[in-house]
Amino acid sequence: MRGLRSRSPVVLLSALLVFALLGWFTFDFLRDRLRASSCDTTTVVNVTAAADIAPAVTQIGNRVSEQDEGACYKVKVTTRDSASTAESLVVSDGTERPDVWIPESTIWLQRAQDKGAWNVPVTGTSIANSPVVVALTEGTASRLGWPQKSPSWSQLFGPDARDLTIGMPDPAREPTGVSTLFGVRELLGTGPNAGQRVTTELRRLSPNVAEEQADLFGRLPGADSTDQPLDGFPTSEVSVLRHNAKQSGGPLVAAYAQPAVPALDFPFVVLPDTKPDKREAAERFLKVLIDQQSAETLGDAGFRTPDGEMLRDRAGDRRTTSQKLTPQPMPNPTDVDTALNEWAGVNLSARIQVLLDVSGSMNEPVPGTGQNRMAVTLKAAELGIGLMKPTTKIGLWTFSTNLDGPNKDYKELLPVRPVAEQLSGGALDQLRAVTALEGGATGLYDTTLAAYRSATQNFEAGRINLVVVLTDGRNEDGAGIDRAQLLSELGELRDPRRPVQIVGIGIGPDTDEAELKAIAGATGGQAFTAPDPTKINDIFYQALSKLLCQPPSCQPASGG
Image 1 (cartoon, rainbow, N blue to C red):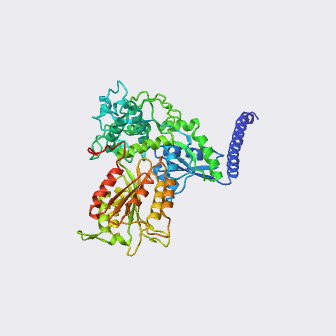
Image 2 (image 1 turned 90 degrees about the horizontal axis):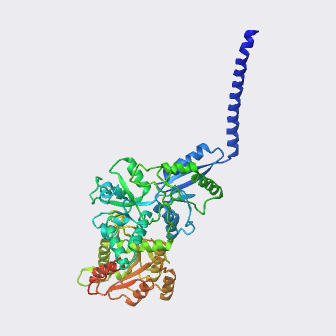
């Protein structure tokens, strides 16, 4: 009995341990069953995020799936550049439409509306922040006094910075470029001759513009590039931190703007046509994104909090600052458009929709050339393409009467794309193959209105937006609208804040010059005529040079 009693506590404890383990496993089983039964379906929230923040959003989304037992939703994150996303919200490109969009900047929400996505919210909830800085090579920063003092933007932009080669992200595609425009205007845009100083500085930046941030990093000293190495370029603070963490290439020093320029604010927006169940799940995910644990995740990735606080102590790294940097209010759309239009005038980058008359009269011979009007016009068009920057976008419609069915006078030959893509894609071969339509008349009014409406709908801030009409005659489509209707419609479509101009170019003696001037003038544009078709090259050059070089960026030639 004594032996039995001595073993009783051991047996008792063993039994209790078994019961505890059984209870625990039973609890886990019941919990999982209850969890499964409480989620009849799992809602998938499709999030499209800018490349900088997509990995952190993915990490946080995975945590929801793994740790939130009652979430009943999961997050699918797609990385995509904001320019392509904005365009896909206007015209579907076949990709899956997101429920949530997180671009780099609120500016992209405004731009999406400008492009025609009218129902996209123009504001969202910021989930992170990254100041826009100028990334300098250590050698350049040292010449400017670093590390004893921090480099300033006043040392980088303006008359004292002429010996520096500063790259420029394309403001039409990169919010960091837009912020730089505001910084330049803040530094140089007051006092006597302010406009001239700003224009001069933008001209200095223009030759080193890049459509993608990666192209600027590729021009750092030691990189495999044939272009002149850069001393620095505007980018985000988080990009500098990540570049330095890779330890590939020389480290960069961040120069911060004083006063601050608009930062990247990474707004979270639920798109309006999102289904109710997905919207509810998206709003729950937003609460997760702005909680303390997610802030730590974003901080580890190099981001600041929405109010500009750096969560990671980087005091030992003097290439960036750990001080709190309260962000500036985001600029309103009108101010953004103004800045982008100023840049377009300097950068000579455009969006051009060309209308090419292919009516039967374009077969008329041009005396002394052995060519017809169509041939000399196509040569002029090739010349015009040669005048344009590779980043300029151009598209071409042909027009006559009933060209694309009984009630449509025009047909797209080349969709609007950058000149570099057109040239590499065989656009010149397509252009050279165009012939006049035997017996075709000139459907000028209907075509011009359709093209102008398309151009205003697809307006691109940061570019000079033009519709160029190449014709040898006057409107001959009695079944379409008349001149009064055309001018009235053009007047209603014209928006000074989003200017689109018509450039009329008349070819040959049959052109109605007054008609072209009336049409172009209704949009603030101009008309040019070449009664002698052999002079079309000179006229085309004159027209594009004048329209692609607008005040305040271009000065009149001496002598008028």
